[in-house]
Image 1 (spheres, rainbow, N blue to C red):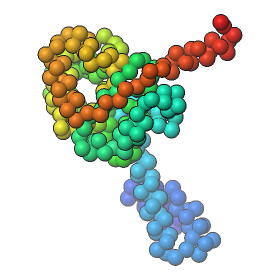
Image 2 (cartoon, rainbow, N blue to C red):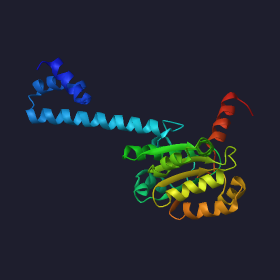
Image 3 (spheres, rainbow, N blue to C red):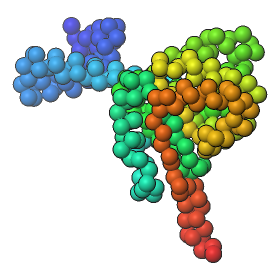
Length: 253
């Protein structure tokens, strides 16, 4: 076979990772006088790396993160030194997903809840888990709409089976009137079967008023907190800091 024919054959076999590096790897083999087995090993590794990268990219896109670049490396732990850094890095290992445990991030707006939740979600994808991210109001609106058009069963089934579901910013936006019932059903379906990260700027004592159903909230929290890791974020707000820094830079008093 010629080099062009080899390229076509590899792509036909869906080995595009090998095809893309075939020519430079052959030159490397000649220059370094690689043994045939070493050359094959390099090509197989190139294919594996490409497939892993493509899988990560696909799952990252499917997750639907609001902020695609969030990572623990980009989080300033020195800004809020009292945050439980050990817990955050433990969650980033993904062991809690393996154990089907949950996590609850509480704190005022701007204290890093969403950043950390998405960073842990990205880490979970790198470890091979599927992840879905939704802001709370969007998630509950999707469920409410699915109920209206007759796809509720399918919608909840998809949400109930994903290994990690991130529900972000509960309490930030107005919720549908069915929010308490729908959130409870979702948490019940996932209880001890899959992991959920839920973030909120409201203390759990306010959730009954927020969702308009104290009984449903009590049942929801009973399940959510049973195997949950609770992280208190703050107390300082990043957004307040940025605004203060901007005023200082502009010379305002």
